[in-house]
Length: 232
Image (cartoon, one colour):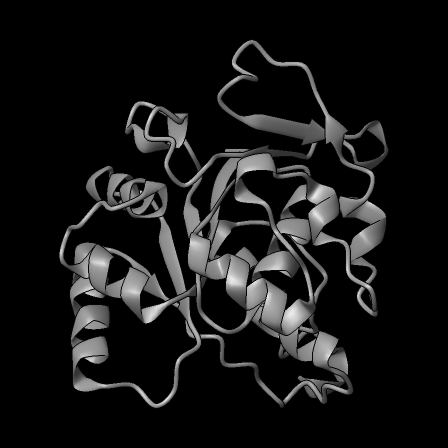
């Protein structure tokens, strides 16, 4: 299914989420994006970006230094006409194939992703803050991020949470256990080093590749172990 939900929350690791959005759009997916207020602060601190949740545009994702080439794709996204454009911002570009970006405000409970009748291929919270994790584990729906995640759990759809926090408290571990028992995939932002990374971009792509694998999205972000015939 082409529709995927991505939520950005207030944990460190904003570049993981930004790279994930870029990759999914490049692979022709319709990305339904929602952003928590705390994520705005983290994006400003880590990437020097100023996101405006009430007036969002993909150009707000453009980096001053762009070693991964994110700006080329995200900068090409333009507003598209849609029947319900009043409630959500929709962006796309013929240069990037069929991928599109749908933005849903975190307070918009009328968004399609707030309902189980809106079909998706899964949801990723990347990065996932401990506060968001706790809300999901206790069934609280205080914003659209929580509600959309709750929908994916109740509908038995793929829900991937990407925490980056370390060390982890017993409370956080218990919340992860509870979510895993409910069907979520706990995918910590833990890059591997067996593929000889040479840059931060390689480390970011390692984690994004694992997320794409869980979603069934084809990619060439990292070398797969055993793919080289010389290793067999």
